[in-house]
Image 1 (cartoon, helix red, strand yellow):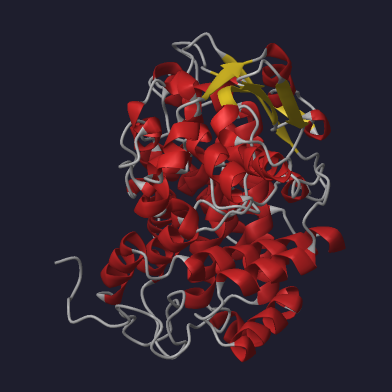
Image 2: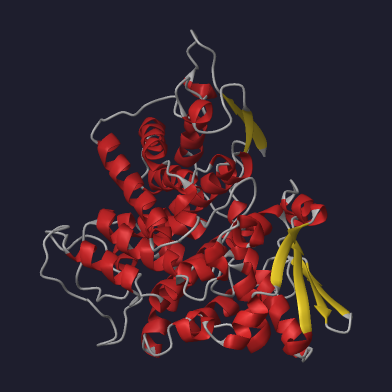
Length: 504
């Protein structure tokens, strides 16, 4: 790997294209021609994971609404993209399919994650790439390499450039990654990929208010919109349109006026020329439907449940953890909604206190049942919930930011104080399913997750058909890529058709 130094260029100078980050990313995308076997398997795992969480959320209101928007844009020659859950004999404009499918993937907050200088869900890349692959007649090899490029680019940006400290949402790293992945998949020249990356970043910068206070369904729409932005940018540059540049290093560009200012310097790790991309292996999925920092808390909740502690004797609970957990999903956020039984599901899945209380009390976690209004209002849960607080501990913050991914820790220590003064402590460095966890997810675990989340929604034979395609992902024909969509059982998909035309 090499570190590319990114900084604002001085007034009165022209930064050569070869020194611009967007050009380096474009070159990376244009030259991606091969993938290692273990990487190909992980790409397949991510495709399965996306299908699982998307179908589990397929009838939730935000997903249904996004689908209604896409249904208004059928492809005129029926050679467009498929909508997740819908029959494969209909197709739609890929940018709208990417939006609908992206919302479905993101809605339950249960797909993969990568945390470094910033936050990300690299699986958010897949809906846009798959939709574009289906509409452009790309084969499985092209789709596989496109996904690989998107993961590499997004994870490199997330490793080197922090957005959240400036209250910029992490989709600003996602849109350029999708554009780069599309460049690889469609075998675009580096010049076009460069322009598409510039356009995508320029249009995708948004504030983090979508993840603060009263969190709404826009949390699911934001990455889906980034996919749509990237697809539209690629469409424009393939017609010859250009974009603002240098988009990172310009005097009035992202670093100078949205991030750390004209004197800042960032280091973005990129593969050496000829080095195969492998960043995807350092991403990690979610076993449970909750924000990533809550994954270990759910596992710890299960441990506490097994100890059979009398909850009425609990006086105080402290979650000793990282800066991120404390300030984003903990009491350090100073969000009263995180302690409110009437809060939205999107807010509850970003409340470490609620999540630990439910996992501890139930000894189980369910993507639907654990978030119902009845569940949130249970008096015993509310009582325990309000005894829990978080505290930042330097050890956990340092481990969270460790430069070596193999030494990062995304866990916590939970210290319980009982009425008689007894203290009980449980610690977990990483969630069980993490690649450094006690039982890292492998292909059978992804298949089991798919089976559980789609039970009653998708026929077993349809699950087998889909998995058979994933097993041959790099070898799929364009026609088979068009069928790479898990179809809901008859009558199970709500709002499967619409009389609306367009967005009105």
